[in-house]
Image (cartoon, rainbow, N blue to C red; front, side):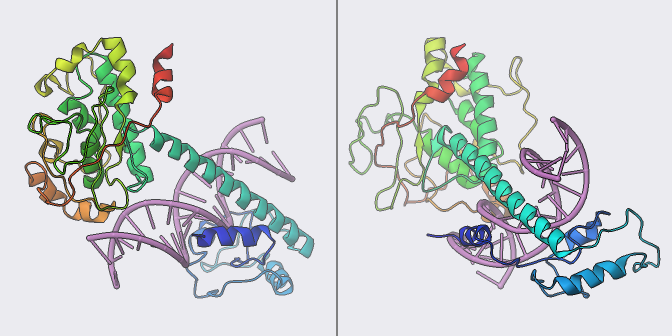
Length: 331
DNA sequence: TAGGCCATCTGGTCCT
DNA sequence: AGGACCAGATGGCCTA
């Protein structure tokens, strides 16, 4: 699917005429109102201006010198240079270059964000984490790993999951919680899920789930391979920690200054690992609006919404090479 | 239809 | 002067 912005960019790169242009683009006095009203359209100028009407523009530029503004005060600042055709062309070329740079910069930023997504404990291509959720989860992940490193927290404990989910939206919390359902539940006994789909034993302890009949795994995958280095360092000792031993406010834990968003009641949103819920909230697209609107509701929930549709029943082997995280602890 | 997310354009500011 | 960075504005897409 070709996005409109791509076409727009291509057009601009090809040298299409300027679509919108205020008449004071080279204003040296930096009037903030110019920017804020640029596209909204003031009573004076509601029409987009195309480049090419330079003559009229130059006239305006000339008249503006020494003119009084709406408040009757003289304009300050350096005298404006006349916007000649050559200057306009230079400006336009500069603007096009700047736009291209800005696009490139933002693409680089997005690439970096995508890299960050790819090493998140929950990586789903279908339920893609939004930018803000990616950053929040990354922050939580670092906190959780730090706490695990400091010895008080099992990477498979509920506390780890709670730290991971702090401040996340409900859909993201569900995603994380779903991904963190490691290993077959005691009730199942066999490495099979409730729908009979074979779940091979995972030597790495990493199990991901997905729902049947859906185009793709709704909850992504949890790669406990991320945590292998931790186990190696810890010798797996902390795996026996109970969730109650985990205290975010405890000594030696990194300070956590609270979720950046209205807090969710994580403890009420997450299913204890000891008793994995057979069902999670049905997979749905990330919709912060519904989350925000229903946050109070969610907070009063006890346990997961026992929605019948949305069980995990397929296995995806851990796909994430432990390179990134491992490298952090290499030295 | 409202709201969230996103890409893009743009002008301002700071720095080299 | 030019590039990087930033924030505001805008419009498109998508979902509830």
